[in-house]
Amino acid sequence: MGTYGNDPQQPGYGQPQPAYGQQPGYPQQYGYGGGQPPKRPGAVTTAAVLGFILGALATVGAIFLFAGVGSLTGVDDAGTGLASALSGVLIVIALVVLVIAVIMIWGSVLAVTGRSRVLLIVAASVLTALGVIGLLGSLGDTQTDAGGIISQLIGLVIAILIIVLLSLGPAAQYFASHRARRGR
Image (cartoon, rainbow, N blue to C red):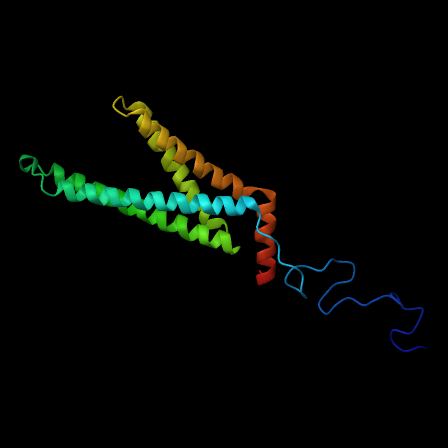
């Protein structure tokens, strides 16, 4: 009887042994023993940049909404309280837009670093839903100008594009490899 590794009857005799923690017959994976980290796909970078842009535009929109509240504070409207009710609605809308902007920007940061794409997809999905509602409302309003409809349509297309880009195969593989590296 020979010693371990020298017996020609043992399987794998004369072949190199796998690295520590590596199963025989399986390729070396990123994060276990020095594999190269995957490069970020262009789809992920594009989605994150679009997320930063939408987040910045939403922040500017929230600032304009807060400015609109400031302009309504001096209006009395003959004591009916309509101006204060409208101010309250504008404050709520501005806060929602600001929260969406923060989530969009934070989701973009997480996507660029490879941590997660979920937050950016959720923010883009919320913007898509709100964009559809706003676009339908604008189309039903006879006083809405073409510029308002076009800007809403562009925002809607960008939000949908973010979702599509982050759902592509290379993006999914990129985030899966980062999850594997973190051990989840």
